[in-house]
Length: 114
Length: 111
Image (cartoon, rainbow over all chains, first blue to last red; front, top):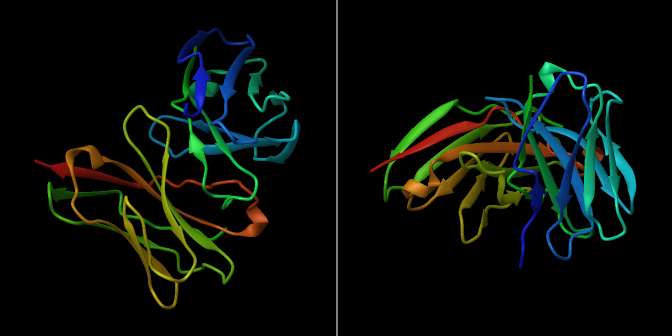
């Protein structure tokens, strides 16, 4: 049973560019959340998708957007990249009906903005 | 969600119990305590959660004080693979599925 998978594992972009990160949830999970983790900090919640709609959003600007597909996979898009967007981006999946805090995280995508 | 306070770092000897404290003195009645850990270069891993009763699973035990203002995560026989950052998170229904991570406790297990 595959867990949460993310691609790519590493990415280097230039300031001002746009980036798309991808996530496939754990089998049987229908909800996907995205987190940003800066070096030395805990993960910060970006947003969550359920039934192809953004259900909840953290304190992130509109440059951060997402999408969920009918197969429950998800994408995170970041426009107009800033140096401060350099971080580990984590995807977490969960199943409706399970305890909400019981989320399963992928290994993350390390984004470096130069 | 209630704020949590954890020591920045701890260590313990391999094979001994690791007891990780968490203070959440402003917790309200419907808020749960969750524990996650993050091993270097990996995503966080769910460990356990509880409301008011003590909980145990194959990974750890969670002891919540009677007034619920603090809790302790216990790893009964720590191994080198338990070296990680441990996060204590308090969340209630109003936060939806959002998990609010602090900076956690960095646990080092010594051989």
